[in-house]
Amino acid sequence: MHETDRAGHEALAVVLQVRDGELQALLWQRAREPFNGAWALPGGVLGASETLETSIRRHLATKVDVRELAHLEQLETRSDPARHPRRLIATAYLGLIPVSHDPAVPQDTSWHPVKTLPKLAFDHGAIVLAGRERLRAKLSYTNVGFAWRRRASPSRSYGRSTGPHSAMTCPPPTSSGCCCAAGAGAHRPVTRSGTSGGPPGGAVPVPEPAPGDHRPVRRPPPPTLTGSHFDPPQLTGLAATAQPYRPRR
View 1 (cartoon, rainbow, N blue to C red):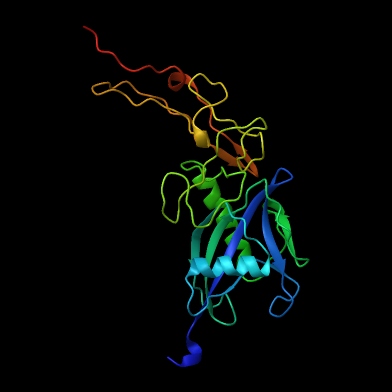
View 2: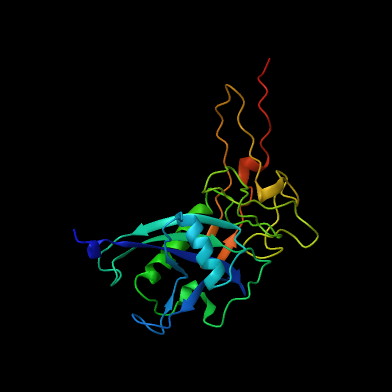
């Protein structure tokens, strides 16, 4: 293999935020060929001494002035030799910006509804849709849809784990409601009785069966993403009235 045949590596980011009631992606407009004038995902080439996450955070901060991320996780890697004229392998990340934050982006950068994306450069359109589907899937088993109202530190993890895929959780609800990704006040944690309040993060308490109790417990359905609307889970049926099992004497 010749030195010029070696593939480079770039880091890209699908940065999503709910704005004006719609799920939107942050895109920047290219000013050179190929795809001069087309919209593309923010990102850039991996530095010689950088990790992928360090690289994408640097590109987001320097190119589109985005430093407030509630959640960042690796999405996918694309290595099709024909995807880029310079033979670049792309590792994409999914990033979420808190609803309460409105970043001041440069003039060549703007938000676009995911459901009506413009024509994007390279394979970036498929990467944005992959990010939307990842978010849709994660809403069914994590707290990734919920973000802190205040600044989320990149060096600290919140949620169920402390790994790179940890999910964000909400603080206790305030007078203005919860600060989940659907918008302030769009979601309030639900207790077993269905009233407002409950544990931080909007977690729905479902009692575990006692030893020897084989009665089925109907768990609440996972939250769904319909278009750009987030539907929080609601307690129904047995899960709303379940009581600890007491054996007969």
